[in-house]
Length: 404
Image (cartoon, rainbow, N blue to C red; front, side, top):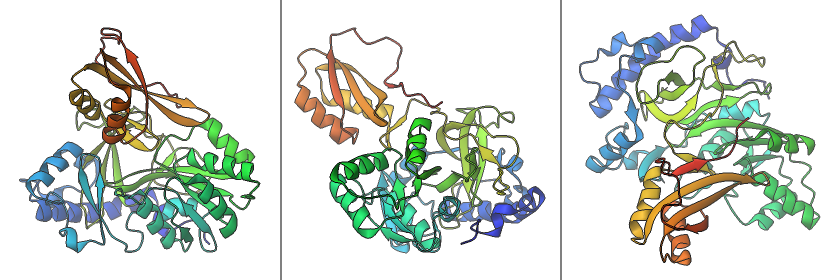
């Protein structure tokens, strides 16, 4: 196995910019042809990252609106649902296409950076249900020649036994679930020492948890990916920032605008993908980050970002799932006896914890817990409070976790 997935990773800055002058106009023209958008834009004039600032931002809410008018993909893809190998659903709902062609989601570079390849058995603990995370990592594992055990989520004891029986060598999943598997295996007397690499995403990798894995002989690297875009950026072995993938263009803009920030400033991550099947142009992720100076010591030459630094809005990712303000509003609307609700995200024993504080008179705790599971897609502890007890600050999601 080579140290890099392909030659694109080690291009010079000039070579990458020159290649973009051909690829970017072609992708803009493709997006115009597919979606009929970007009216009045001369595709041949968009030849650099700086030129992209002339184009409007595309937000997830706009995709949802387009999909209502023109199902299933809002006219933003090269084909309808029958033209893809998979169709996925994310909260919203938003429908995303997926293909099984070589490294379609661009996860191969990340897994190569993790040291995963031919001869490895990867326990893929990302969900295969509705959302594309499981297939994103499976497609990448196939691209690097690894064998996949499609474990999905839950059934921890079975997961631990399978990892021991199969001789699993690498883990893919959310950052904290590997610890749960390892702890269960330890209680059961199972040997999982062959797991020496972990490729994680879908949540924050806290330094203390990474150190715990390192103490157990496991190198844990993280990536930044979304259901719409696939892989955006990933850690190299040096673990110094996230290297932007070669199949996307990343801009950092002032939140709520399309205006690029000054180099090094924190702003919203906006991504243009070069995927011909799903040409998203200036897609606003809602995530905050900043561009780092210099190149990665691992030899990969694309720009680096500092990783996930919070949300441009109040949306938080808890246990690998986004929790959005509109979901909290839907919870309150379902229960007339509830005056106000606030989701609080904390950490306990290296795992995310969600608490829902509710202002109410006479609320049924059991009914609320059921609604939380249905609407927020997560289990949460309910704290019932009297009217007027929550701060009057407009905040409905309070992320108290630290990312230092």
